[in-house]
Length: 390
Image (tube, rainbow, N blue to C red; front, top):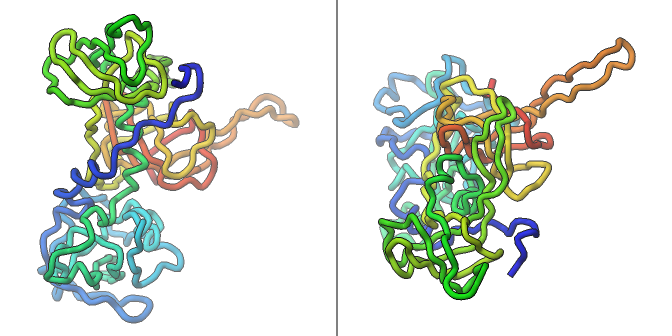
């Protein structure tokens, strides 16, 4: 058993089997609501030719939430290809960055191909092509991988479909309750006492818990210590608490109090620790877009306690639904400018904020938002600023 005074244990990970079962019945692609349309042939030379809008009038546009952009074409990446073969391990963000200067405009330019058995999923081996319709760039699946076109049963599991972002980067963070919103922490079930002559509990011990009135036998929970407060640096208000992962447990007997068996612990469990259901609502479809409201917030926490934040790390923002933040919102991260002394003109000067990366919001509460850093061009730190992309 590891003393609680040591660093946090790695947050609990959702099993691949459970996640695969969840994903099996869902489209992982942000184009899941597209209707079938006419097939488009990929251009064979560079630059791609423009297409006649009258010839493609039967092709519907993307049917889900889209990025609203004026009539200007979506900027393409420098040295972008005309075709790209999807690789194992790719995410939609990775693929979009191959074609686009701003990957989060991907949903706006996606164009389906009805020759594909299931146009709503992209698999390794698929060939994506860049085309133009009415002068606007579009990306379409021009050739599916062999097993995708086969009329026989697919051998590869559906979880091999390309996802919007790497879910393994967010699943552990969400399931462990690394940050507890203030009102959420007050409502969670809590450990009352340890059965037997134990002041603290670890794997193999039984504990009594209050607040599990409607729970089912066999339900699994993560045990979390309510740690230090999270203070909004903008107004000094308490918005939540750091949650420290303690272990896992299974409900053995219902009632008030209920009995939970601790099955695995990384630190000792004590009265007052909270229980969070192990089943976590992980969003399966992401529609990247600019926020509908002006956002000017801060990064207030990062999983793992690191001082410098990089790609695919999860951060906590001091903005949530109360501020107009939604799942799928893309924000630009700015390194907060330092205040320096002017040795020549006198006084102090605040240096400009410098763009440092891009993140996408995947979970929101009233005053807290979870974001995954998609790109980091410079080191990102706690209290750096997040704003609408320009």
